[in-house]
Image 1 (cartoon, rainbow, N blue to C red):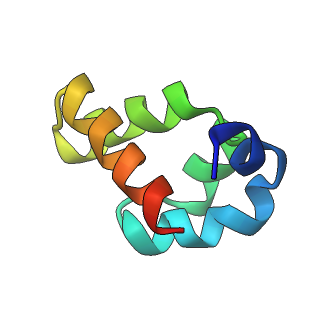
Image 2: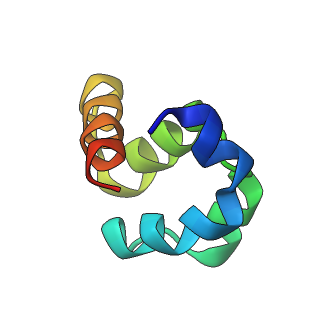
Length: 65
């Protein structure tokens, strides 16, 4: 799965993202509209992760969905 597929079908993947990262609200996920860099920023903000950690976590998540 690549990010373009996720972004294009964000409404479907939004629930999976929220299941993975429970601190992200519906409003957070609606606001980013599937943009990967925005998701990484939210993970940094809500979980205190570094940019590298957030990107790695997103890549791991993409590999599982």
